[in-house]
Image 1: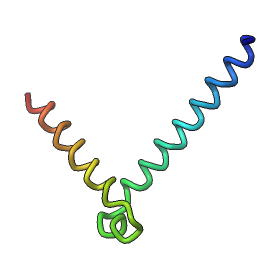
Image 2: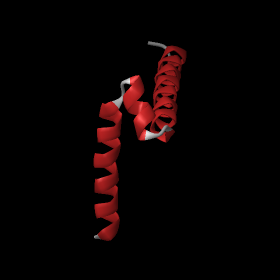
Image 3: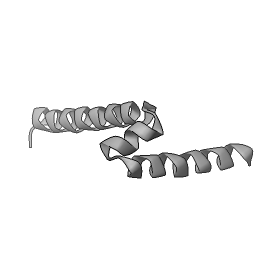
Length: 60
């Protein structure tokens, strides 16, 4: 592998991860009722569990 192909692969992975995180932020910014209507209740559950761990970590 050349250096350029390695950099290209890393850049592609970074762009995909950035798009995934941006999409997740947009979905999580929607109201819970709307997320359920469009079929993303598992994101709501993941956010609630993350929020619980975040709050518990800050309390300790």
